[in-house]
Length: 175
Image (cartoon, rainbow, N blue to C red; front, top):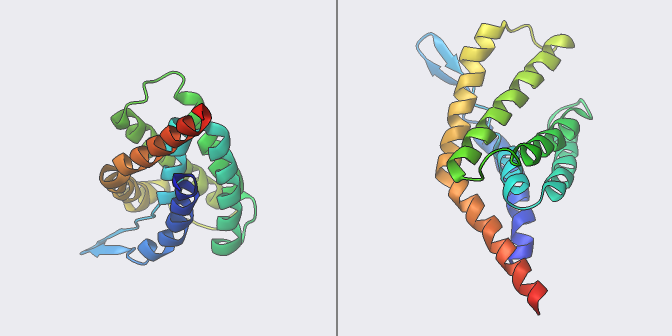
């Protein structure tokens, strides 16, 4: 049963991201904060680190393509970025400890890097004209804060779910 729970959570997070995006932007007097939920990629990073990098890259490719088709009109952007981020997460864990706190910091840094790459790409194709400091203060920092809060609340649940799947897989191998 746990076998199907990992992809089910990924689908659920994929569908919940636009619902949480409806809470953005948030206005404070003369300051506007854009919060971009990146729940799915954070989950895929955890899968890449704690479960299986190859499977995370495959999920990243599938969900990245779905993200491109359903949410933006540029096919290939997320279907390249999601697997790339999963690959980097799985590769980098060889050099650092798999502690939950370190994994959380790594995941937030990877999401921040992905956001900067997206900003640079959209700037390159003239999809945005936002200056970098406005992007940094109005979108990147609030996005990092919101996604860090999400991981602090649910990162342990992701790890628990993945550990339960690993235990089930080991149990099935012994029979």
